[in-house]
Image 1: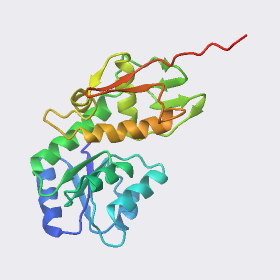
Image 2 (image 1 turned 180 degrees about the vertical axis):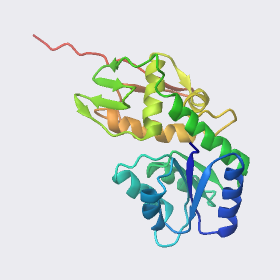
Image 3 (image 1 turned 120 degrees about the vertical axis):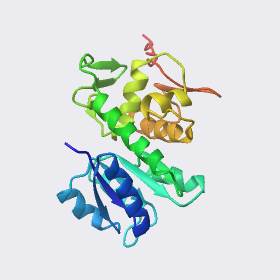
Length: 237
């Protein structure tokens, strides 16, 4: 079956450009032109991914993204922004977007990023890696895409889940930001490594007892990150 892409942009010329190029490579595409229309579209069209503009009438991209995530809708989202300010890009990720692109953009790069997200979803988990993964108080059932921390289930976005799983598979190994971009986002080009830092921050907020003093995901200064087994403190007799 064709993958379904929902395009949300209030500029018809941009929507038509995206729709034309996505259909050329075999995607099924539906376009809406304001933020509120997204919520009707996801009920009827049921997209596999949303390309979401930031500046929209009725409800902006931040609000749409935040509302979807609050409803536990984990559909992957690529946010488009005309803003060059890094703050706006990070805000998109903070509100639950999986990736962002700055206008003007190459349709071919957008297609590559969509395909990369779909490849990651399709290949996680591998059929040979269905055994539960345990590290400290974190338990991961990769085949069911479930994560428990201290015995309680936690909600991760698809990208947060993939990032955690990738870190677990390479536990104890220092991974550069570019290695994480390649392994989790499937980027085969020089990407903005801040996307890694934002997702690491979100993941720490959900799995660490104290995100400011992490026990699992350690920052390796000027290099990247490493997942470690927490040190068990012995109680005094």
